Image 1: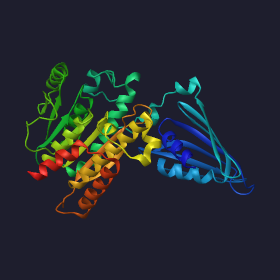
Image 2: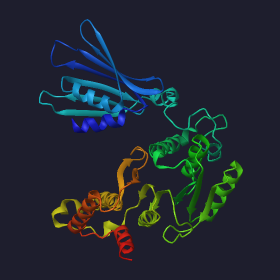
Image 3: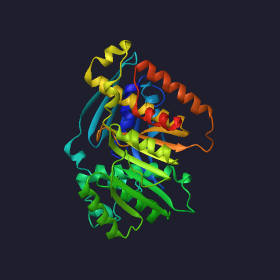
Image 4: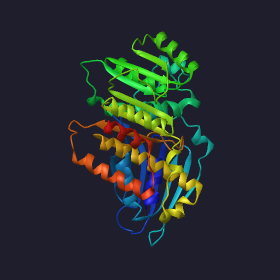
Length: 389
């Protein structure tokens, strides 16, 4: 059932079409269950219709609860047909509880369906409402329609803004908030943060985008000037040696390659940033170090070793931030089907930090893990060197 649960977590989104659970093990009671997406008062649900011989029972559940409900039913039923925009599933459960899942590509007519009604109210930046920077960046047309080839980017931007929305209570609305975006690139998210916080939420913010590519910096600077974003600036610079500020409220670093992420995190800690949002990329460092004979069934295979090293890298990063006085989470940034680099580390500074038991525990866990795997990540070296000074 665990495998089925993972499939359901992926399938129950706004591109879900329907599911039919049938063939009950017992003749009495519920004979069939139908599941479909519904939207009520701007909230997205999954509606369950459970049929007995004479009655129909309705229940609206969130995606998380819907997964639990379907797994519950599949213990009592033998079969489920489930359809989403891209995939059709047939789920069979044997008498002994063995689950078999058959997947196939959805019919062309399903892939071409318009799901705009299902998704329009989900996003912070709404489809149908023209946003200047999204138009210039090629994500949206002048009429506010999302360019089909850019819809994944549109979802990614809105997903990121959801993470920002969660930490709004940490940002002081009575003063200027300074945000630094390392490796801003084309700055989809940099513009989105400014637009969301300043234009939609009314925060007094100053954002600095930093990148190594001159042409990117020049282009983004011209766009910021065009929109009248007076407190949004872009500079050419390296993450490791940037010294342009002394204090920062929030640090954002997306897809900074390998140890560039570590330098950004260390800078953020040094600046006493209240919030850190990081999507790491290309975690090569520990792949060259990691060693444990007991784990040879994994480490002897390059692909598995690479994936394990990446997970260990980000896990240790989160723990180091916890040791430095942050509440940390590792979250899914965007669906795995769109990019394998889909982990986001979110760290929010705790109000009370001095010798906190969580910090001590995190430090002990870091030492145990590093000794077990024979690794010495650069983030630890950077943070430890600052403590020694």
